[in-house]
Image (cartoon, rainbow, N blue to C red; front, side, top):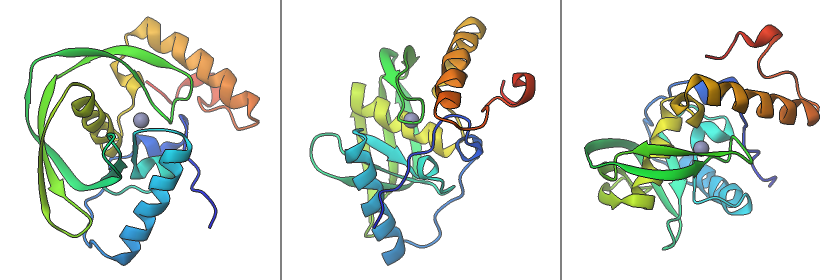
Length: 177
Ligand SMILES: [Zn+2]
């Protein structure tokens, strides 16, 4: 089967709030396998469903100890602050220093429908927060100040148009905050 294409900035699916997964079944499992394949190929350490065009609340990840899946995740607690140079597979080639909570407690379900509860710190915590943002239609650009946003959009616009796609910002760039 063909590798899933990772959607990039400008694709409206990345701005959508995803819906809860209703059934944890075989088709979800095989979709997750394909997402993991795309994630490893990128390469990345996490990939959320909207990044492959699916508005559902789940993501795959591998924080160094094998492939994992988190379904209908919720962050139930956060603590501290941590700055980290954060990038995104959907915004290729760019990254920014972004401050987020240092530690989080996240809960959800695995692919067998079992409840999962994880206390994560630093990079692992950052990974989960980043994927959660994707499920809520939020991108790294939303964390930047006006000047940084302008600069980033200029670069992205050139990059995307070089690839022969439509102008992601539309006429006069009015579509994106
Ligand atoms: Zn991302």
